[in-house]
Image 1 (cartoon, protein in one colour):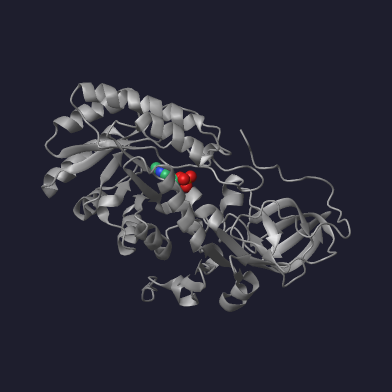
Image 2 (image 1 turned 90 degrees about the vertical axis):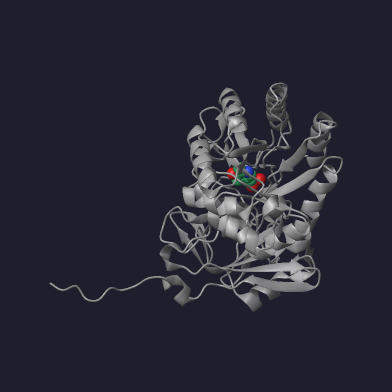
Amino acid sequence: MAVAPAPPSGDPVLTPGGAPGGDEGRPPGFPRRHGVLHCRTHDLEELAERFGTPLYVYDGDGIRERVQAFQAAFRELDFLLAYSVKANGNLAVLNRIGALGGGADIVSLGELHRALQAGIPAERIVFAGVGKTVEEMEGALRAGILAFHVESEGELDSLERVAAEEGRPAPVGIRVNPDILVNTPHEYTRTGHAASKFGVAVEDAIRLYRRAHASPHLEVRGVDVHIGSQILDVEPYLEALDAVLAMVDRLASEGIGMGYLDLGGGFGVAYGGEEGLPLQELAREVVGRLRGRGLRLLVEPGRSVVGEAGVLLTRVLHTKVAGGKTFVITDGGMTELLRPSHYGGWHFITPVRTREGAPVGPVDVVGPVCESGDFLALNRELPLPLSGDLLAVATAGAYGFSMASNYNARRRPAEVLVEGDAVHLVRHRETLDDLIRGEEIPPPATL
Ligand SMILES: *Cc1c(COP(=O)(O)O)cnc(C)c1O
C-alpha cells in the first residue's frame, strides 16, 4: 500500500540555489500564480495580512466538490454522507455540508450541539463513541437523532434505561468490529481489529441485536463499521462489508431487519505524493454488493471531505542554527496543528511566495510552544525562508483546528472560508479575555 514519503534525512548543510519549493505535494485548489500560493483565486499573502497568522484557510468549493463526489459515486443507492464532525467542526463548514444534503457523525453532546446549530437535521445524525454518558444519551434521544452507534453491552443497557425513563424508544445500530487489522500509517488510527477498544465482535453484536429487537425501549435501525483512518486501499472496506453483510443476512433470517449499513469513514487522502483512496473503485464494489438489498448506505468521512481543502498559514519568526541543525521557528506549532507531534503526521509545507535562488536544505520547522515535541516538520528539504516569510502547511483542513489547544495560553487561530469570490471569516481569532473566560479567583483565604 502507498505510504507518505519518508522525510528526507541527511546532513543539515544548505545547498545554494535549489528548487523553489518543490510543489509536487501541493493539493488541488491551491494553485501558484506569479510565484504566490492562492486558495482558488484568493492570494494567501493577502489573507494572511488581513486576518493575521497563524490562520486556517478552507477551500469551500473544494469541500462542496468532495461531498458531491461521494454523492455521485453512490447515487445508485439511497445514500447519506454523515460527515465526521471531529475532523473539522466549524459551524460554517457543517452548515455547508448540511445544505448539500449531508448529515453528521458525532462523538459527543458538544458535537451534537454544533451539528444542530449549523442546521443539520437531527434525523441525519448518528452518534458514535465508546463512552457515551447518560446526559449525552438523553440529549441525543430528545433531539431525535437517526441512531446511536452502540459499542458495548453496557452501553446498550444504559441506553435502554435512558429510553425507558424518557418514554421513547432509542434508535440503535451496533458498531461491529470485523477484526480486520488495517495498515494505517499509525497504530492510533487502527480501530477495526479485535484488540481495539472500538466496536463489538460479530458474535456479540448478534446477541445485542436480538436483545435490542426484543426490547420495547430499543429500535434496531442499522449497523455501523468503522475500521480506521487514512486507509488507502479498497480491500479492507470490502472485507468489512462482506463480514457485516453476512451478519445482516443471518439476522434477517431471524426476522431482525436493518434500515441502513454504515461503512464508516477513514478514506485516505494525499498528504504528500501518495494517491488518496480510489473512491470510484470503492463505490463500484460497494454498489455492486448492496444493489437490490434495499439497504440505505451511510458513510462517515471526515478527513477525505475537508483534509485537502485546508491549509494552515504560519509566519516565520526566526531561523536559527544549533547543533548542526537549521531551525525555522514559526508562529504556529503543535497548539495549532497537533498531527505531526501527536502521531507523526506528515504535511507538505511550501513557502507561500517562492524565493528564487534561496538555498535549499533540510530544516526542522518548529513552533513557539515550550515542548521539544512542538514541530510541524523534521528534516524537511525546504528553501530556507527569512523571518517574516509565510509558509503554507497543506492538507490541514482535517484534525487541524479541531485538535487545536490553548496550551501555553495561546489563543486559537482564526478560520477563513473561501467560496467563489467571497472570503468569510468563520471563526475569530481568540482574544486574551477568551483565555480566562469562566475562571474565578476566590476571596482571599482566611488563615
Ligand atoms: C474519526 C471517525 C470517522 C472519520 O474518520 P476520517 O478518517 O476522518 O474519515 C468516522 N467514524 C468514526 C466512528 C470515527 O471515529
